Image (cartoon, rainbow, N blue to C red; front, side, top):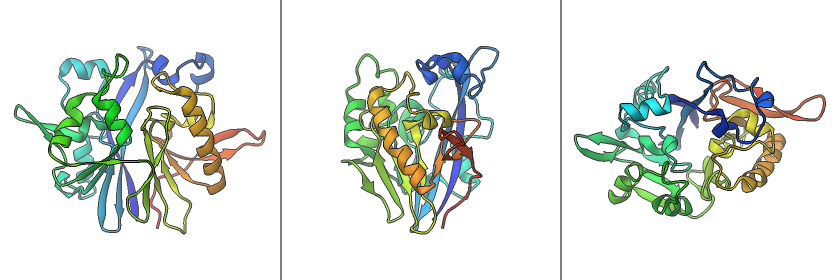
Length: 281
């Protein structure tokens, strides 16, 4: 098994959303802001080669936004687009066989589809897209809070094309790759675990912890979380798992720490130790 982090752009967001109720003096050293008082949020995806399968986890915002939409997001591509970065690993959209949507918020699923003239079509025409059944239901029936991020054009064309498989909880994708329900950010949020039986596992955290500091600080949750108390409960379980296994943690949105390991410092407090990205197996 091999894996690679594949950048899909960067956005700049209001810290109030990303850091929630955490007081500014506590988070500012971890998440510096620009002159407009915005903090960066990377849109990193994960490319996995396992048992002959080419698997992509999440797809970023994509390229269907108009100029105003890109301005509102503060969208930029400092390392290139998702498709460009897949090509650096010899992968075309047609090569991707499985797309795992951790959830269907726009910044994670916008690249599921693309514009073809005036039509919206799946970006990965030969892929089976995997998402939790609960997540698909919530995205299909958004409420006043979520309709601004559950955008039908990001998943309905895939559904109409017969490319979705709806999951019912934790699911083994290959013998080395599995999804794990990590409820809190949304009811059907899932993370992805890589295990080869020999090396420490890898956890693609997604929005269980948007930034590395969120994973180390149990009570720190974003204002985006639909069920913040569930996030804390879920995070507590995975913190214990990460300490016991020495897992490599991939932080999807962190512009400063993309991969790390949870450790206990000399005071017995959890913190993230940065590790160099690589492959297992």
